[in-house]
Figure 1 (spheres, helix red, strand yellow):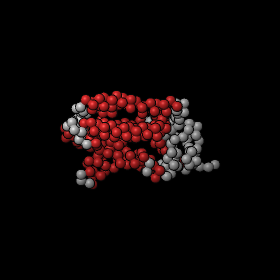
Figure 2 (figure 1 turned 120 degrees about the vertical axis):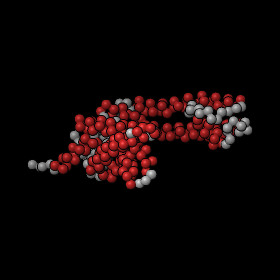
Figure 3 (figure 1 turned 180 degrees about the vertical axis):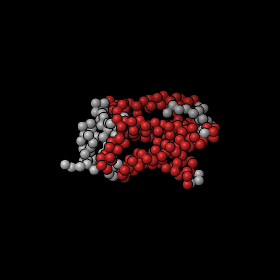
Figure 4 (figure 1 turned 135 degrees about the horizontal axis):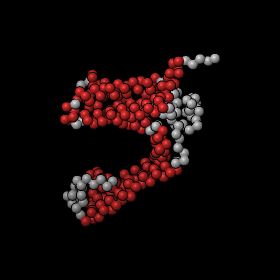
Length: 276
């Protein structure tokens, strides 16, 4: 009878807990991780408030060190339980994990590295990983798939909006250039058209002539229509993919791929057998 290597069994179990969410232990791991991420971001925010930083510097530092050590242990564990560590280390989340953890250690050796502490806020990006939780995974996968499917359309749309802003900015410069109303150059006029088209409206530049105000009114109306376009594109893709949502959280221990169909038994990237 074949005996199972205790080390392999331990690594397999740890891999299921860290990378997957279809077990009780895996779900609790993600919940604890979410709590640590939110706590860390709150600490970063509080440290930026002068009087809080002055009065509670030691307490905040202790909390951040505890969180940093826990994230370091998690990072090492993620590297240790997969067959190809480089697949995680150089992945998007691997890079985020590294750069959100290393600043605290650099502060011990490098003077002036305190400015890098703000990089710890990158941990907030890890919340997307926590969408593996059963309650969120269906909607999370649906949203991600819709965004991927509509990225080409959105890119073309953004390019068209940029061209429109350049054209409208140039027109406003031609109309308002001599009116001493702030349209002193084409780049500045393009900046105004972007601010107006997105309905932000800082008010630092405003048209003074009647024709300029008429064109500005048209741009403002266009702004409402333009805001609705990306929403419609993504919503349409979400409707198309509504019946094709995968709830599988299985993670390949060989190639670090986690995009598998619900009934998949093998990784579609490398063919490695997935956990039951």
